[in-house]
Image: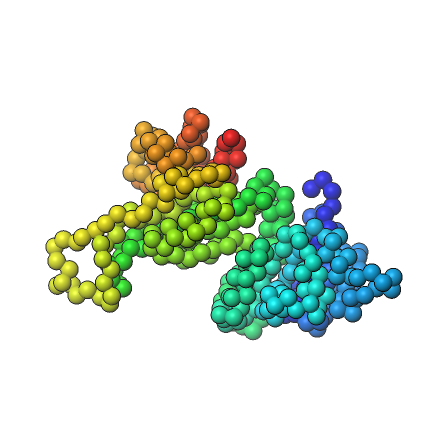
Length: 393
């Protein structure tokens, strides 16, 4: 970055607070001027000197609400910092922030802060999954905060699960990219993974899509500075840190999630392998084998990208087409009919380019006549796709 930006680093209580000095050090090395505020809970795990020695700046605590000249510390901090990061963000902190409880210097400062706010949660898996915590998370996200993590792994208690604070380098990378990348400020919506179309509670139509390409697109967009939401079908893969996820199962649920968010997004990438047919009726329980019969009534599912093309205003649209052999003419027809900006084709029969692979080989066509091949890891292919959409007028 051309000049240092002042970052407010909030540290709350929890064993993950011991990583705060390393985090502060890496932020300074990344070019930020770091102003640090410790909550009383954080002070139980580390001393202010452990951070001030690395940031070369005073570390503030709840004892610093007022200063000798009569100025108000939380107002000064809120107005002088351009970015705010809370790591770790404890369950107690999230509750205080949602409630607007300004009894701590950190929350009081954030209530007056208008810049981008990043939260790196850290807590036990049961706490993270609790309905009260998830409600608070939903509230802070709705108010514009962005999450980095939490990650899945071993916690200090010995438990394994989602709740571990993201690694320091991941947090720094997410913050740096989001405030300096070419997609900075852009709201990107991505569909990823397969869908499942149930016959009954046991059987369903689906496909072998893993979600790898869609999540690579999400990670690349995040690193280019976008605010990313992934509408994710059933997959075992964890989403990248710093990305919001809406979990869905069926094509209908995916359509509802996309249509509800479409008006506020700037870019939509339809990467998901959405099942285009579904049983005409879902039956509760399990249909007995003898009752299945020789034929099955099916119906088409909603075409998400066709709907988006018909309702687009300022948005740019990227479609994906998995084909058994590449048919450029059919792809160009789809590009025009759905009013897409780009369409990305890949041959599912080509080794290393189909479902579930870590690599891809794609042909990218644009409404402006661009024809571009990309080959490599799915992340590398994603980088190429975003570079092309960024160049599309």
